[in-house]
Length: 320
Image 1 (cartoon, rainbow, N blue to C red):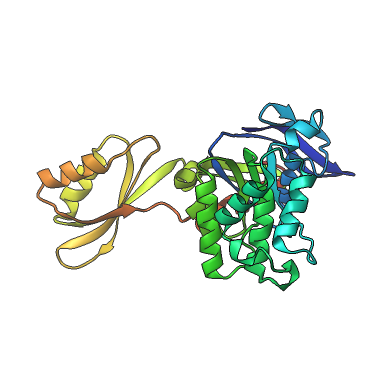
Image 2: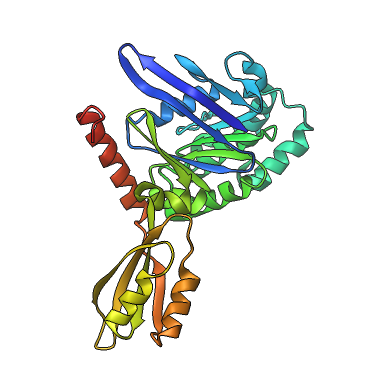
């Protein structure tokens, strides 16, 4: 488990990270999202102990990263945006070197072979790293992060510069590792965060502006959820029936599909699942539902809305 409390980093009069707190549970994949200059990488560097905080604490499985750095760092596997590779070494020699540097206590040969198999680099183990493709170099960096089977993996932009096939492979690898590790995964690719992570933290101007499950991010911003439907039947009957369902805030008809059906959007409160009630209400009134899907904002729309709100708040001194 990773626990961050009131973490702050100042550079002179500038607050790069401003009093942030969050917890990442064992087996959770957390997506760390933010625009350039938001404080995302600074936060990840403080979590790993690469830089110290001005104030606040980071604990890794109960060990404070500054007070007990040796114990805390032994729990972390870290993959920076640019993997820390020795380019003139072969893959195997590099992993053996990193194994010794980390003082891993597991059987050396067997453990390295296991890691190479997991990361799918066994076939290049005798090749010099500088001759590998970008994707394979990234995999070798991933392998060094896994040496010693650390319970916490911190991955800073692990798919940057990779082709679509490599991105999918790394994404699947991260998801599989999340079954046995706590993973903090940063990326600027929103679709990647959505497909890979259980939960998202959005940081802007050094502060956390959202912390929610991936599927709930858009509703956590607006305080409500949306359901989009295509329904056949009388408009007045449909609107009156839907408005009386518990949890429904408002119902809008967006447009006609044809003479018999139209598209409607229902806005309803968080904490409600109205799908069954909607189905039953339309069935009772002989109004067939031809299509039903989430009408919530996309992850991209939610992200842009959050950043826009935070920038507006900063310009107005916090008064919106």
